[in-house]
Image 1 (cartoon, one colour):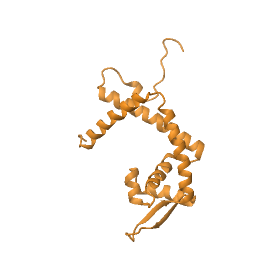
Image 2 (cartoon, one colour):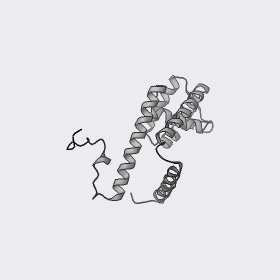
Image 3 (tube, helix red, strand yellow):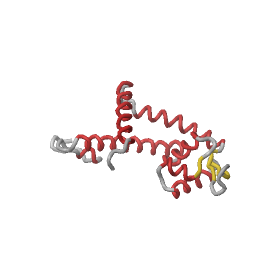
Image 4 (spheres, helix red, strand yellow):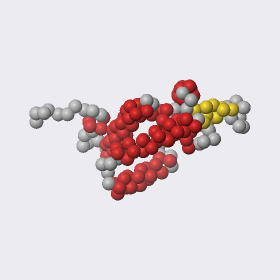
Length: 165
C-alpha cells in the first residue's frame, strides 16, 4: 500500500475523530469489538454446529432452567419478540432438541424444556463456545480482563440506577 493510501472504513469506530466526545469514542470502540466477537461466534457456530446464535442463546436459557420456561419468559430473557421465540422453538422442537409440555400452574401456557438430546448437544456447544470466547479475549492479560470486568460492573450499576433515556 502506498503511503498516501488509507485503509477503508470498516466500521463507525474507525471514523471517530479527536474532537468527538470521549464517551462516544468509547461506545463506538466497544460496539465495534462486540460486533466483531459476535460475528466470529456466529460464523463458528454455523461452521461447527450448523446452528445460529439465537438458537444457541435460547438453548442456553433452557439449560439454566431445567424445569423449563414459558414462551413469554424466553422472549423476555432473550429480549426478542414472541414470534422470534416461537420460530426458533418450532425449529428446535422439529429437530428433537426441545419439547413443549403443559405448564404446571397455567393451563394456557406451555413450558419449553431441552430434551436429553438437546441437553447433550448444548453442553458440547457450550464447551466449544467457551473455548472460542477465551481465544477471542486472549489478547488481554488476566489483569486487564479483571480491570475491564470491574469497570463494566460500575457502568452496569450506573445504568441500572436509571441513567437518562
